[in-house]
Structures are given as structure tokens and as C-alpha cells.
Image (tube, rainbow, N blue to C red; front, side):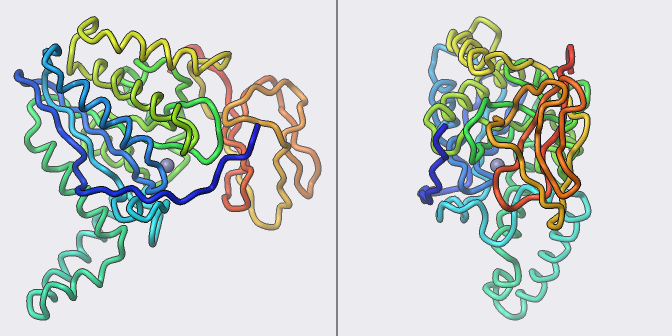
Length: 331
Ligand SMILES: [Zn+2]
């Protein structure tokens, strides 16, 4: 497998809202967030295709489908983020702190002139405030359940997969995807956007669609959005023929991997550990009992039994060596 390209491709975006389609009848709302990491553009491209598809007159659309770009300023520079990772600051405490700071600077700027307030916040602060306002506005006008899908891609090539916070409505929503679905992974990372909106009453999942610059990732995320719209109830099963092809595409991408998996444990690492992952593992991969997974200064790290390696670390930064998981019958 060739190593993925590391390139910086700025994406010209005019506005945070990429598009919106509203049906004639009231119904559920589906919000897609694309590019909360600014170097992940496949979500924007896939969402544009789905907006176009759902706007066609042959679909009896209910409710609303709206797409927002995540980190607009980072995306315009082709970077993951400018000052901080925008997908790690969505705890209730951090959002409350951000809004308190914004209100304070707003007060100061009233006497000093508005420009002063803008400089008191970093790029991601401003992005996060705008996303909060945009999603809240959609929720305020919603006339049914609100669903939210967070679209990502990865630096490494691999099978796309979905992760979700374990609640009954989210289990039902994400199960519409014939991709590997991982339970217990979202909870391992603090401050992700999807978990924040779950706490605000949305039904959410996040999806990793494939490698950043692979055109196949756009196809994968397009299929995910179409199936999410169907699962949310924006159109009836059977109304959109493309949904059948979308299901077949993702089913094919999954290959021999199990449909449902759960994280058993996280192999955390620290700088002094001397951790090195064994080469050759994919983003999600089978490992039989005793297989050498990694090494550190204490020796070999082997598979304790038959299971699954998830998100092996092949880059210098990071404190997750890998996750160890297993297949389950359902989530
Ligand atoms: Zn991402």
C-alpha cells in the first residue's frame, strides 16, 4: 500500500451554509457538518451531490436537509485547524466558557469598537460560535426530530466506518449503514461535536469516510448521507432508487470486516514508552491470538485472543497506540 499524499489544498468557500433543501411536507431535520477538520473536504463534495439529488422534483421530500461547513477558515487554507482542533472543544464547560468570553468581549467592544472583540477570540473560537448559532437556528425552526451527521476522512487508507454515542435512537439511526459500526469509541475522545449535539437532543453519528484525497471517500460519504436521510425519514424507503446502490456500495467497502464492533480497551501510550506499532495493520483489522501487535520498552504486545485492532498509530503524534476491540452481534 502506498503512503497517502500529504498535500494542502485550499477550498474556496463562500459561506458556512453549503446548501439546504426543504420538503413540501413537515418532517425530520437532517444536519450534515462537513470539514470540522479543515483538511477533510470530501464531506463538502459529497453533501453537494446529495443536496442536488434531494432537490430533484421526483422525490417527495419531508422535513429539511441542511449542510454546514465545519472549520471554514482552516478549510480556506487547506489546514486541519488554525489555532486548535475544532473537534475537541464541545464539552458543556468549554462551550459555556467560550460563550462567556464572547459576551465579555462583546461588552468591551461596545466601547472600543467592534474590531477589538474579534481579535480577542482565536480562529476556532469564532468558528465554534458560528456553528453553535447555525445549528441552534436550524433546531429552533425544526418541526420534527433533528438528526446530525459529522463527516470525516482519515490520513490513512482504510475501510470507512461509523462511530456513535450509545443511546437507543442513535443505535437505530446508525444501524442503517452497512459499514463497520463501532460502539464505545466516541466515548474515548472528549469534546467531540457529535456528543455535544446528542446532549442537546439531536440523534447523531460520526463517520470516517476513507482517505482524505481519495475520490472514493466522496462516494462513500455521499452514500452515507443518502442512507442517513432515508433512515431519518426524509423520504420513504423505496422512493429513491440511489439508496439501494448506496447500500450496495458501502456493503462492498466493508468486505470481510464485521458489521458491529465494540472497543474493549484503549492502549494509551506516553512519550517514554518507546511504543512502535507493527507495520501492516489497516484502520480496522483482524488479529488472531498471540499475533504481535506492537512493541514498547517492556517487550512485545500481543493479541490476548482473537479480536480486532482499531486505529493503529503510524504517525509520531498521538497518545492512542491502538484500540483493541471485538465483533458483537449488534450494537
Ligand atoms: Zn476528522
